[in-house]
Image 1 (cartoon, rainbow, N blue to C red):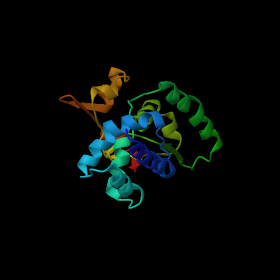
Image 2 (cartoon, rainbow, N blue to C red; image 1 turned 135 degrees about the vertical axis):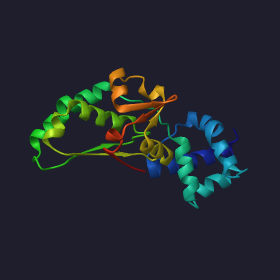
Image 3 (cartoon, rainbow, N blue to C red; image 1 turned 180 degrees about the vertical axis):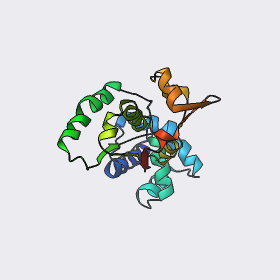
Image 4 (cartoon, one colour; image 1 turned 90 degrees about the vertical axis):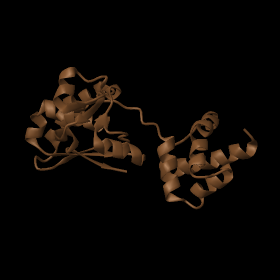
Length: 197
């Protein structure tokens, strides 16, 4: 890579870091450029990296900025990922909050970043399986992510078998409907979560 391109990529990286807290290390810039940014440049008709960077960082072209963020973010997730975290949430944190908070107070749960929804929907499934907390009080669940495409996928609640790899079969049968090679999350789970970009 030529020095001018490295300077431009660092400008882009610093803009991303300052505005959204996403940081790309120097040794990964070349790979991100070759694997992701060049394709995005072609899609938007840019031949010059400097013009591309300027349109994002100076002109703040909103559709290009959102597409860039969607391209850069990594959405690696699956249901019941890091199961111990859900166990801690339901065995310790939520019961403790339930004791400390007024019974009429809604407890809010935020999943950030929520990617395509698997983790926040896992919390819903835990609630539905545990039931006791739901009988005591109301909860509000919100999933947010910087990637607009990931949010749209989360709202649809359609997954591949890979996303369900850690789920017990009885949970899959109870909360999903299989159509072809896709798994459609049932409304009882989907309707329990709000999503925002």
